[in-house]
View 1: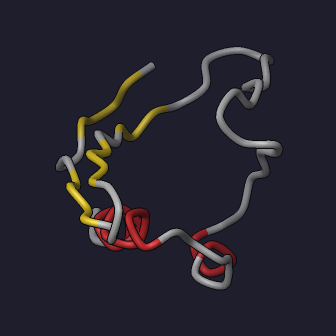
View 2: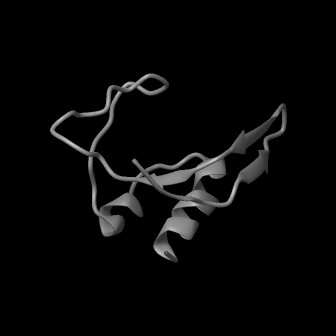
Length: 68
């Protein structure tokens, strides 16, 4: 279920623009999300997340999450 809608991020790449609308959510029940847009999903803590290779558009969302 959705806990909070975070700030939308609009990022300008050289060839296109992307708008990301992030949400802070929790999983209710034993189900595991199925990846649709990506090949893999994994759970990491915040310190591990900082070490991952993020797309430029994702970095402001990670910073928002750190400031919650």
